[in-house]
Length: 194
Image 1 (cartoon, helix red, strand yellow):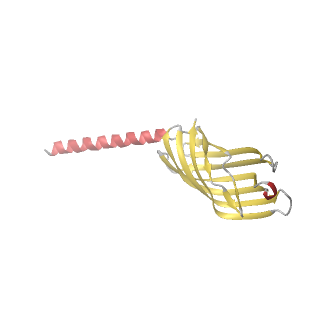
Image 2 (cartoon, rainbow, N blue to C red):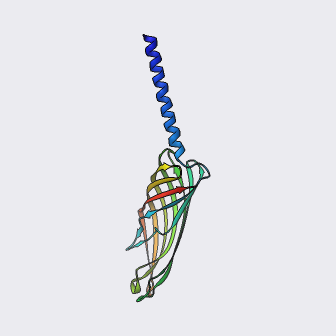
Image 3 (cartoon, rainbow, N blue to C red):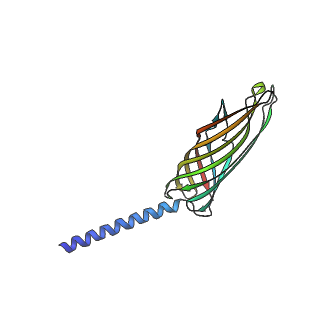
């Protein structure tokens, strides 16, 4: 009787281990691999420095995985605005960012940490209230990505660090500078991998 119990217990443990191994393999199959490229589309809460909020959600971001758990980040954005009559205000908004990301786990739910450097040149307001804003931010970020499939994930992240902005009134007058240290961004986005 003891031999039958021992054999039954051994078989149960072997089946549980096989099941856990299959689940781990399936989870690992969902994340990107080294050499994968991803495009990030989403909403980024603007960086707030001084009295003005600088929009940052016009940029297209991408990532390239140099290893399964390390990615290089890059982003660029360009928006040309013509407000039309009565103000006839025209502006060009540009933005660049770069950084890195280290994934702490590469399962279906993949938490990460990383860093970003961002530069934005935008115009806020209209008419006599318009300002040209130049914004620079250096931030650390933390968040998580959930992989629904190997080619698709949703992510959320928060960034904290240093931000500096210069505000120059379009109508003339002295420019002002402001700096901030603390939570600089919050984003929710979708990733498409190739």
